Amino acid sequence: MPILLFKRTRALVAQIDEFLDTVGQAALLFESGVADYVGGRREQFDTHYRAIEDAEHGADELRRDIEKQLYRHSLIPEARGDVLGLLETTDDVVNQAKHTLGMFLVERPRLLPGMDEDWRALGSTATRTAEAVVLATRAFFRDPYTVNDHLHKVYFYEKEGDRQAMALKRKIFDADAELALQLHLRQFVVNVDRVSDAAEEVADRLAIYTIKRTV
Image (cartoon, one colour):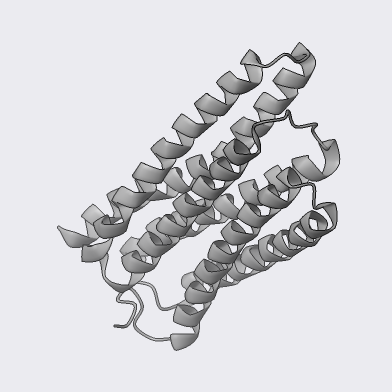
């Protein structure tokens, strides 16, 4: 089914698909990067960090090019602002994922023993949240009546991420460790979970825009 918002150009449709593909790939790279760091696989972590840097750069370029085209032609004027806002908030998911892996790269936090699975689960849940919002966004452009089929998964995973983040923070502060290290690790928990939060912000916009397009 064609993207219903656009009437004239297949190139723009393809670019939006490519942009969403890039967001989905960045989410997978984020999951791998967190798992690599937790597993002590520094070389693989560095590789995944460089890859997510490339993905973030590619997503930025695609978004800017799409935005230029939206102003030139193709989009029905009353929907232009919604689409621009949607692209920018979706790009924030990639930015947050790259930012968080960058924190691991630079600060090299010393993880406490016995919590590896908690860190991996938190990273995986953030990725599932981002993947769900990519599906919801794709649905918005193709068939807005199916967006809600995906939005409920975004909210489910986001809440799961909040629960996992809280449990991990409690473990960290219950552990026999220096307060400075506990506070340091808390910031990493918050930033891993922020990928889910960024996806939730996209979902909130989608919920509103979908109502506007389907009433």
